[in-house]
Length: 247
Ligand SMILES: Cc1cc2nc3c(=O)[nH]c(=O)nc-3n(C[C@H](O)[C@H](O)[C@H](O)COP(=O)(O)OP(=O)(O)OC[C@H]3O[C@@H](n4cnc5c(N)ncnc54)[C@H](O)[C@@H]3O)c2cc1C
Image (cartoon, rainbow, N blue to C red):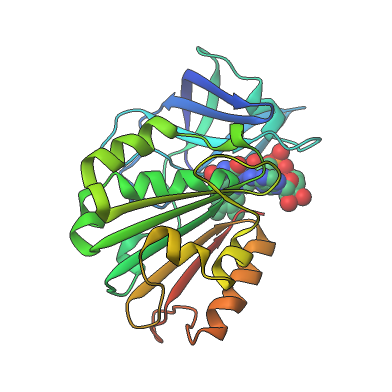
């Protein structure tokens, strides 16, 4: 049975209209970067729970989640209404296999996110293990508008720490932003802009690709990777890309 802990909201970050992060304290079990917890609230006498990836690396005391308020969603608007001091149920044990120890070795690692899926990569990128395993890491973040390009400070910090080994590629689909590619990930991959901007090759010989976020992006980009001779990675049949679907 799932063990629930009472967590406390310590800080709320409101990035844009419907985009939030919560920092929480709860004595959860040790977890691996890339895993998700479950958060829950009592709604009309029922405990309503949903999975959320940790944004914080495992060594941090404070937990953090990054999420969208989905209109008419049962839980996310209520999470968005929480304020510091409020309580939220947090699952004691994290879950999931979107972690470095599940990936085969490669020269470079591409981390591709839509929206709030950025968070899971920030947890992984802030572990030393990721920098021991890969020579270069490219973080691709696709959002609609400029103000959804969250976690700028954390990204600057990673750039300062890892220099040219770390490449950050924002992509906005509904408004042009200086320094960002415009459009969608699939188009930028297919016409070569992603590799050109990153100055990092994306190939079956040198790369592993992590895809996280919405189902359409994962489906389209997986098909484009298949067309490049890449295969979905499975434990028994090593491949070149790994996926985690949020919705
Ligand atoms: C393994 C896993 C990890 C997840 N981690 C995160 C996370 O870190 N951050 C996060 O924001 N969400 C994450 N999600 C989605 C999250 O669990 C909820 O589904 C979401 O917050 C909406 O909850 P809800 O109860 O309001 O609505 P739900 O009943 O869960 O969903 C209502 C509708 O919202 C859509 N939806 C779900 N998630 C999103 C989203 N993120 N953006 C836009 N539309 C969405 C669904 O397609 C559905 O149609 C994760 C899901 C899974 C399976």
